[in-house]
Length: 110
Figure 1 (cartoon, rainbow, N blue to C red):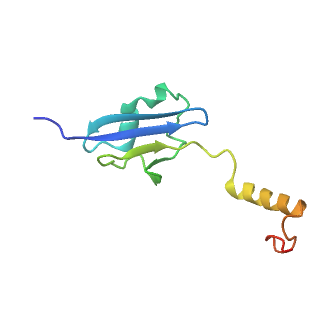
Figure 2: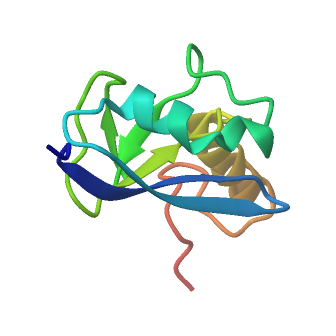
């Protein structure tokens, strides 16, 4: 008797390179089991599943979720900057440069 299996991909990327590993896993495998089976840590030994978030097709999931046929499991890198802080700094710079209204923060009207 053969065990039912599904095709999935495990993906991870850095600014320098990306790796997408296609593999066949037993039906009922968890996301964590799929990542381990992919051996992606051979290419990226800094991956730490205790710290990093994972997802399927850009939607965050837990490590114990079971992927479906054709799913792409993605391992996300930690953010290096808080997006809100970056936007705030950009808005302050626009005000300082005279490109934004100092009261409303919106675009200056000529």
